[in-house]
Image (cartoon, rainbow, N blue to C red; front, top):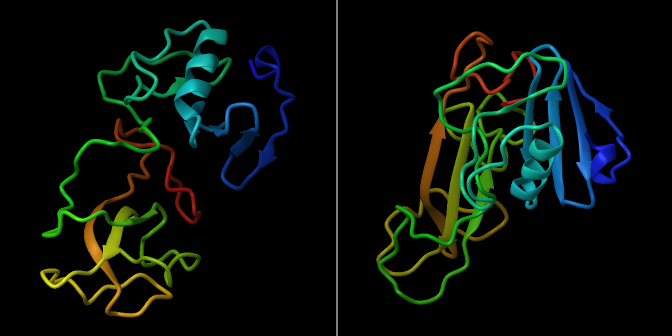
Length: 191
């Protein structure tokens, strides 16, 4: 499929049966877990890359390139499974309003920390810790009305930035679960 898209496959073989190819053409990464036959696409150009891969593989493209797409693609040679679950593909960013709020209407710069934020992950423990296996933490500048000054962006002063909001959840490691996204025990792979 990659060759049909003008890509020369260069697979990086990672632990726990994960293979990864980075597409310079699409600005995205495709991850395949050979033990499960699951394919996930991520990165800035993920929606376009996913649609192109789906077309080459004979699957219906996602409904809208910038929105959440259909169920995970299946690797070649793996029977497609019917699924009523929602997508594992998320847009790289959104311009819609969020639940993060500020009392100030002035323009603000926000910093987003994502994924791998569980306390047991030694690689990111110093950067952003949440009480779960995956997470998103949004940090922004403080103003007089901000009350959450206890958690500041690493490398900044306590009076300049603070965590505005967080979203986090558990990692499902049971491969038979419909909620599993390919996370594997003992790895930094959160699916």
